[in-house]
Image (tube, rainbow, N blue to C red; front, side, top):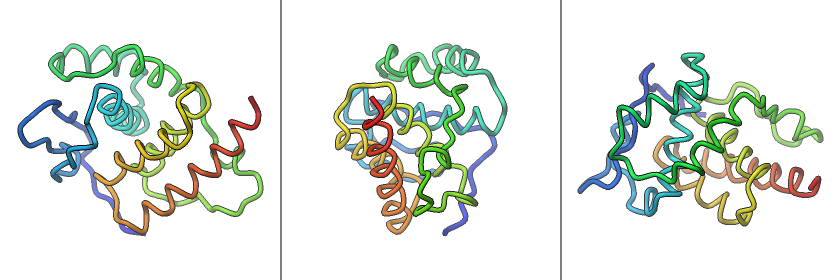
Length: 167
């Protein structure tokens, strides 16, 4: 896997902007990454998860800081809050993927954040599985290469099969 070097404090994606840039990587975002408020919420949730893991901030503090300092970012506040407030529900992907066909140990933090936020949405929201996976693959494109996208897709497909069957 490619080593990912992200700054300790993650800044947010500005939406809308003439040329959206992911502040974590400096890469230009594809226009479909933040095509609407819900898509932008997913990108912000992944970045907040990264800050949550790295800085050990409480979810409500992360949300309050985001809304205070980035009030112009157009997100679906209710949806973002539902995702972020589930951060403390320790999503153990090893337990979900009990057959051990996919090894998630030693993966980069940003990929784990994408997987965990997507897993939260798969577990607690009623959005179609294909939509969720596609949206998080779009988010992940800002941070990873094509080989890692295939890995993320495989893990999310497996997680979806497990968590949606339990409902």
